Image (cartoon, rainbow, N blue to C red):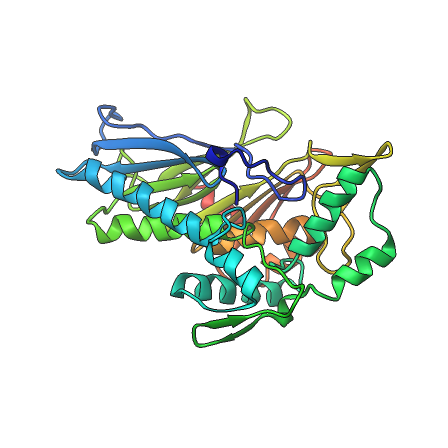
Length: 339
C-alpha cells in the first residue's frame, strides 16, 4: 500500500484500484417519495494511497466516531505498509521472524488460503519480483529468464511458516500484502463502526467497499460499476448489504523497456508479466478482504479460469470486462443486480 502524504509513488506492478466504482447514495436531507429516510453524514480523507470515504447514519457522537475511524485506518496502515520502515511487514521482511499482531497473522493466513484456492495466482511473496522489474525499468533492460528463475527460488506462499503468533519467512523472501490489506482495513473499519453503535454505514477505499445495514432511503446500498472505456457510463447497478466488493482495473498501465510494452501485472507462478488480462474485475464476497484478494488473482487467471473457479465457490460473485469491452458474469452475479 502507498501513502501519498509521504510522497511515495505506486509501482507499475501494483494493481491499482481505480475509481471504477461510483456510489449512488442519497445523503442527509434527501427523501424518496413514500419511503423513510435516514439522516447520514460522510467524510473523506486521504489514506492507503487513495481516498477513504466513510458514510454513516447520524448519531449524537458520529463526529467523534468518524474521527476515531480514520485514526484506526492510519494505525492499520502503519502495520501493513511496506513503504513504512518500522511497519510490521517491514520488520518481518528485515528480521525474517517476528511475534506478530493478531491482525497480521489473520491477514497472512487469509492470503495463504486464497493462494491455495487460486493455485498460486494470488501470492504475497512476489515483492522480490516486483523489485526485479523496478530495477529493469531503471536500467532500461528487461530481466533475463535466468534472473527471473533466481528470484522464483525465493517466492512462493508455501515458504511462509506460522505457528501461533510467530511468522517466519526464509532469507531473501519478502512479503507485500498490498493486494489484500486494503480490503482487510475496510472490513476492520466497518467492524470499528459497528462496535461504536453504528448500524448503517459504508466504507469505500478507492473501490474496495464494505456496506452494512441500509442506505438513506432504508434500502440496500446502491452501487454502480462504471465502464473502463467510458467513465460516464454505468454498466451495472448493484444492490448490496452486509458484504464486500472490490473493483480492480487499470488497462492503461504498462512498463515500456526498449520500445516494448510489458504488462503491469506479474504472474507469481512464472515471474513473467501478464500480457492479456481483463481491464476490469469486480468481485462480491461476504467480506472485502476476500473480494480484494480474488480481484487481484483474477487478473492473473484470466476470464475463463476465473469464471469457472468462482462458479465453484459459494458466496463469491464475479463480473469481468475484457479488452474488447465484452462482459462476463458468474452464475450468481445477477442476484446482486436486483433490489
